[in-house]
Length: 176
Image 1: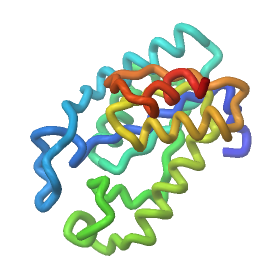
Image 2 (image 1 turned 120 degrees about the horizontal axis):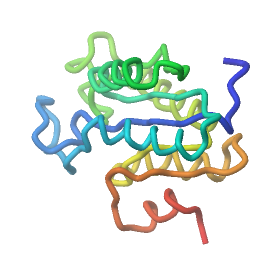
Image 3 (image 1 turned 180 degrees about the vertical axis):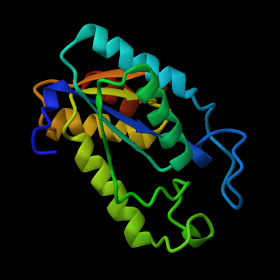
């Protein structure tokens, strides 16, 4: 939306599907992490709203349509005054993999998935606050890119699934 104020916006890039241990995505590698419950993302959003009560928007993206839909319902129930911005053209292929996409989503193609991912990242450049898990390189990259190239005056992260490596550290607090 043209009236979206980045300084009043939370980015919530949810990485789930085949990233999670115990997933049921056929043909995908085993999950790498215990995925945080969606309520943990909601808690992070509430912490930011308490910190900055002028927040008015949430940018919500995920490769996992079910997670996105469930989180959207949580937001409607718990924080109905917030405007939620979605990547309406997102393929939501249900996997972080770029191969065998047609088996996950009918009509999905690599070009569409890449366009979806880049659009989601571009959207998140318009957020100041991020609820992420640094166990995901994707969400860490989004926060890092927003910190360096985004439109908000400062970037803050709430890490609900902390990892301990250089990218995670940069995503949380910026480069030294």
